Amino acid sequence: MKLKKKHMLARYKNVMKIIPPKPFFYTGGDKAVLLLHSFTSNTIDMKKLGKFLQKHNYTCYAPLYKGHGLTAEKLLTFRPTDWWQDVLDGYQFLKNEGYEKIAVVGLSLGGVFALKVAQELSVTGVVTMSVPIHREATFLQQRVFHYAKGYKQLEGKNEDAINLEITRLQQMPINSLVEFQHLIQRTMEQLALITSPISILYGVLDDSLYKDSAEVIFQNVATPYKTMKGYPNAKHLMTIGTDQNDVNEDILTFLNDLLW
Image (cartoon, rainbow, N blue to C red):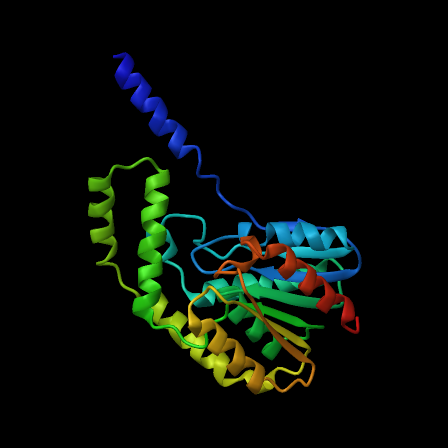
C-alpha cells in the first residue's frame, strides 16, 4: 500500500510540473515591443528578453498562441489563422494601452509573424531570430511529435502509453501544418513590402537552413536599414541559449538606435 501511495505521489509530482503558460505584460517606458514566441513553445521563450528590455525602459507584451502550452492533440485543433489573430490582438492590446510606437521581435514562427506584422502594420522596427524561409508540413509534424513526447513524459505517462498516444496522434489531420507551410511561403514572397529597419539574427549551431534564410531575408527586404548577425554558440531558441546575453544586448542596441 505504501509503495502504491509513493508511486501515485510521484505521478502527481510530475503532473504538477506542467504549469499552463500565459501572456505577459511588462510595463516600462513609452516605447513598446511586441514579443512573439516560437512554434510548439510558449511565452517562456521571451520572458528573459522581456525582463531585460523592461529594465531598459521598454514596455513588452507577449501573446500566447492558441493551443500552445497545451497537449499536442489540442495544439493541432488550431490553425495559423488563429495564431495570427493572437498576434493582431497583441498589437492592438499595446495600441489600446496607449502605445503609439511599436517594434516587433519574433523567434522562429514568431519571426515569421514579425515579418508579416511589418508587411501589414505600422512598426518602428523588426527583429527576427531563427526564421525559416520554408518548412514542409511533414517536418512541422515531426516537431509536433517531439513536443508531444516531452509533454506526455511530464504528465508522468509510461513509455507504452506514450507510444500508443503518439500513434493515435499520427492519424490526426495536419491541415493546420499545411497552412503553416503556406503561411511561411506567402510571407517570404512579400519581403519587399518591409520598409522598417530590421535586424536578422540566427544561431550558427542551428540547422544551416536558418543562416541561408537570414541571407535571403536580408537580400529581399526593401529597407536599407538592415543588419544580419550569426551567434557562434546559439542553437534554435536563441533567447534562452548560451549566447542569450549577447542576443539581448544586440536587440537592445538595435531598439535604442531606432527613430521612435
